[in-house]
Image (cartoon, rainbow, N blue to C red; front, side, top):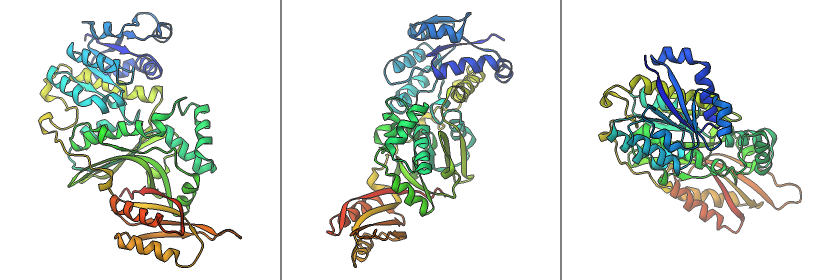
Length: 436
């Protein structure tokens, strides 16, 4: 059969991996897709790099718009990244009647509603498996494999940089700044790691998973986002003593009042499988009412793992590109007219449990005052460590784990405890999830 012609925009790490895997596994991919899939045009500002990776037989250009305008191109693969020119190119490709495959989580989290509406109107597909968790087929699982379920919550380690840093901080007892430098030296962190360490990258991905899990629009602007820059290695050690690990989680949960959508460092019981995901690996737990908890684990980044997801989308689009648009899997799993505009709850309305660490004066009655304030706010204590003050010292640490409560109650109680004369400085507060 006539090959499907692909225009590749960006031939960096993922683009190069896509070109390599597609060529290496050409026969197997053709057997699955039913026809050959060939990259016939590559756009990149670095033509020398494009020539080195793509070789001869492929049209090379530094003008990406010429590729999306090429009438011979059936599918455009966007691997440029960012919100700017990538958005223009994707919308222009859709306008020109071309299907789009993208790994651009930021673009979809921020502008996905506009992009999917344009694709729906034009009758083309936008596929984005590679946008979340690299080579892990979590989008496919949420859109298709779990379609019998009412999804109750999704929680994931979806940023390899931060997971590597947290794993090293726990293993070596080093402070955040030292491990960040190590991560940069090893290539796990960018020279400017802001998107990773501040939780923004994870929030982009959590936004996409939330939209598919619950059939709601992309609502990145409403997500609560915290990174790991202020996390102290002492809290990682205390969590370990209490039987917990700290991970940066992207969490989305359906509640009667709306949806929780949040990214922050989270204590997880050490016995959970996801708590034992180390290094730069990713993992996502999805809980459905029929299937229970399902875990998806693998490499969340890298040339070939991400290329695996890009090419899986190419195969899907190749199989379905001639099908009636009504018979294709909807972009957000639910039929477009069934997507519900549910609100994202403010963080003050989140219901979870808490880890609290406070530095207090080592004198009688302190603990009684603290527990009384918590009780007055309907917050009960699950576990506690009270450290002995070092010889000659007048202050010590108290660490508490609470039962589930609403965040605004926890905030009010913490403010009252911090106002006690015997409490020194701010209380360290981390959220906890049982993931059951």
